[in-house]
Amino acid sequence: MKKPIEVFLRHCYYSKLQELPDRTRPDWFNKIKVFENFKNTLDPDLINYTIIYDEFYGGIEKTFLAREKNVEVINHGSECESFLSTLDIVQSRNFDDDQIIYFLEDDYLHRPSWCDVLLEGFTVDNASYVTLYDFDFFIAKGFLSEIFFTQSTHWRATPATTNTYACRYKTLLEDLDVHKKYSSEKAIKEKDGFHFSRDYDKFWELKNYERFLISTLPGWSTHCDFNHLSPIIDWEKILNETYSITSDNNEKTFNYS
Image (cartoon, rainbow, N blue to C red):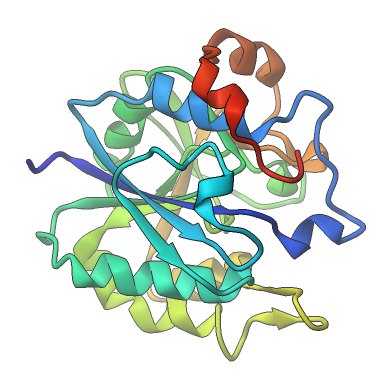
């Protein structure tokens, strides 16, 4: 059944990017809890979701995703290639032009009602891309931003974000070459295994084509990176309030937290 939002949630058994010196997890971070937060805060009347699982470092049967439905298994081991495969999977679905596609990485936490807020973002004039992540990198950096508001929140125009964002399917197809370019020939390839998209850079280029990105103020989601949490919100409290323990969750774990 068609629903307004199609989520493509990328998971992996292990990510080499966690070994980079600038990557630090909050003490409260736990992938099982983050996944439960996603499921417990989504509105099933508004979204369908597909899990894209990269099995390069370990099979899905070893994880808490083993009994999940709607899983597409890939085998790459790098963020770039997993994102490119996700683009291929999305394109193969042949959605209607107005379908909202939400690309989501596996270390993002959400506040309740985020589905409604995401839909509100697409009512803002000239917003081609929407993120719920109030990325602190652009705070007090001298960027001039327009401010908007919808029923639930304020929004600001923002220069760029991570590879967790939403757009309409028509927009994605029109901008597909740009999305692919920054995960292939313009990707960051520091050394073997450390391949990841220049996601910030691609939004700077998209802005040249009058593709504008907006984000909520404060954030309705956060990247679980200690150095770049969405400000103001007590994310540990959100995690604890939206996590429900089940016996199945305790049976399956990832090999890192």
